[in-house]
Amino acid sequence: MVTHTHAIVPGDVRTRAQIRETFGGSGQGGICPSIDKESVNLYSDPAVGELNGYYDGWLAEEDDLGPVFEYTGAGKSGNQTFAGIAGSGNRAILRHAEQNRTLRVFTQVGLLPGSGTKTHQYVGEFTLDTLEPYVWRRVHGNDGKDRNVIVFRLRPDGEFQRLAENLIPAATETTWELVPFEIVTAATLHSASATIGELPTPKNAKKKASLPRKAVENSATSGTFVVSEAFNRKMSLRSSTAAHIAVRREAELTRTYMAYLRSVGRKTGAFQIRVKGLTSTLKTDLYDATEHVLYEAKGSSAREEVRMALGQILDYSRYVRTEDHPEPPKRVILLPAEPDLDMFDLCRSYGVDIVYRSENGSFIGETVPVE
Image (cartoon, rainbow, N blue to C red; front, side, top):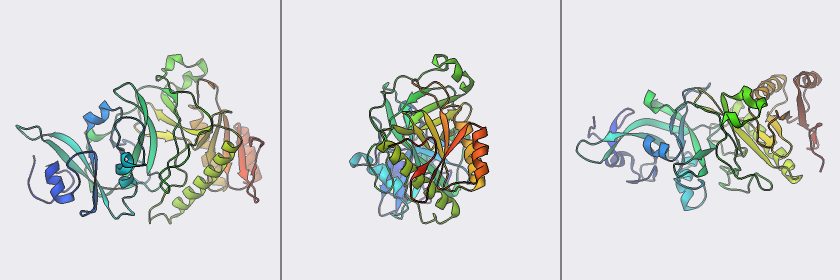
């Protein structure tokens, strides 16, 4: 039922005109910033999203920090961007905290009786996840064209409405494809491509039956090669916790080693992995596409971090395959300093190598390519 009071709380249904009276913003478009109301209003229409190859909504799986609402950025055709006029809405989301604006999410739920006016349900206030504010995804549009989109990871900030119909559908099939993304950092908003040389043009999604026999064991998953995430993301004012410090150290280490790989002519990126039955997407840290090497990075060389990295890389490497490399990848843990000696023995027993940064800044390990 549509009411006409100015107060809007999670679960209320309003027309866009009524929402504008309270929270400002444009009368059209999905991302609607308002300077005077200090708000960035995000409108999600499931029918429009599905038509363009993506879904907005809640992940069914929660992590230690709670629920996540994924919202796809602006741009219905071609690759999405943070740059220029086309990227202005995406920049508004990315910079909402520093511009003292509140993210508010609304989902389209119906029409006013006897008219074509859409109604929207207020989900609540959100802020970007400070550890991973956004990820890049490859989607397949209704026009048959593949493109790269920005998927923002939103955390509820206060009261919110979480309905079953707003859950993202779980993965139902396996697809494998190379996707050459560009790095876009929150600090610079755009930078050079993270890939070296030409990557193969993405083809139609490859079904499980087309994969070599060695990959059949992964029939419940999908893997997509994407560029490593924005390694030097802008953190919010709440970034002083140990977790955020660890993320920044890991990001800096990964960025530095990626730059080294690029300097010796390696193509670099990362894999995104969807697991059948789940709505969330896994993401690896770094992938050497030239030599088929998967890296898992950590911001600390402590024993517990090495053990965590070992579990992650054993998990992720089950799904990392390409047309050129249908076999399992070489697995390497990337560390900021030399770990305890017995950690080398532990990792070696599982077929995993270690690369670490020395005191003079160089990288040491059997996998490190020679300039």
